[in-house]
Image (cartoon, rainbow, N blue to C red):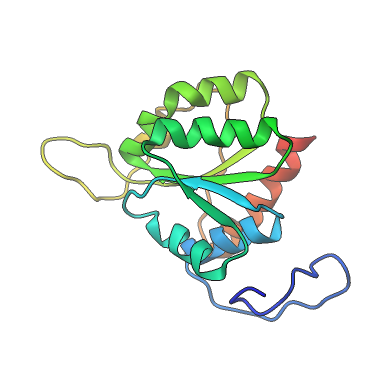
Length: 166
């Protein structure tokens, strides 16, 4: 049972209770609702809250990779094996996995990834919010959904699986 209080009866007549979630919690919840059981990760601010939520709930096994490149390689392997997979990153992490993103898109693998918009490094360390990390990837062949609220974030993750697998 998840910390969210249900056994994933969504779609089987079970009513879901209202809850106030952060964006990170909504993203983790959506991965769980989508049936994801494996999520390769590499910690990078600010997405670590998603990893922590997934690990705390114990429904999705989080696998720590030794680099962002390997996160996407692991995600591709899970998708090739026919399992739903989810990962999350931001900023420099997204740039480091870009080579594998082309591979995933070129093979039409249904990998879903959450990206927390964070500025790429300029002079010095930057934790400010921007979209220059994701906009750099616009030609990789990945569909991109930009959410304004936690509810949209949850919905878009679920929609992304539906679209990717069609």
